[in-house]
Image (tube, rainbow, N blue to C red; front, side, top):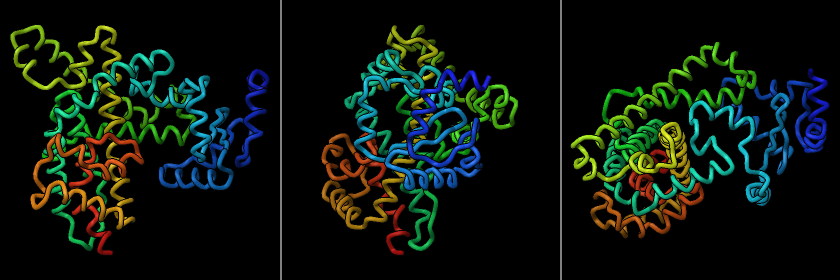
Length: 369
């Protein structure tokens, strides 16, 4: 069977082996070199390979070829290539159960159709109606950071950013009030963290790509339970909104700002299953990427004091003596320099204020050090 497989994909393996990369064992490839329970060590090994063999390096995850690109021009050429339009086996396997028919799992025409629908629902004029929500949750975050910032002790602010991001995204995307920043129930946060961590672990242990092995493992049981929990929240909220539309509560529904879920439900071209996939993508992957991006920006600002000073000066020019007043939609277009800083990670400008309001507290310890 192995010989038949290798014969069929002979050209694939021949071209893959022409790329620079670490020596690979038959069948299992480089799996043993990268197998780890520590994501940090895995990332360090990954970066060492990229530095040693880049700007183009190859890794074999068993029979699966992974090509690592570190050159921006090379990445641009791949992204723009018409024939590179599919997710590939690894991405599909990692995302299909969690995000179902969401943007992270789809490709081709289905991806374009969903992208068009979601883009129309996330227009800037719609997001601007939720600036009050952004400001409220950012103030909660800033106060929590202020309470722990003594100018001496270093703190891990990632959990704070994750909680704030989840509250903002859940309220904006579906009007679900998680209140993980102020409440004691962290079930949703823990379940999201669970399946995000599991995805990373599966990537580090390719044998878990085999469904029956994964489902029989303790990791698989935790993963499936977390997905069922998140999908259950989304399905229940969809049923609630449908019930409100069919009853006299429609007037109250129309008085509220339309969320992403409301707008998706209005589209006849998108099914219930697809809406669940999109909402899981926004709440799960959106929370993770947004909090990571904000944390990365704050870390870079702490390491580049001259940039941090320019960002703070811009905020002071906008808000004057009342630096901690609630932000309004009119303030966002004036945050030109902060948006340029954030654009290095392609984060939406609406998250700029979240970063700005955290600056005095989150980097105090690093600044004085």
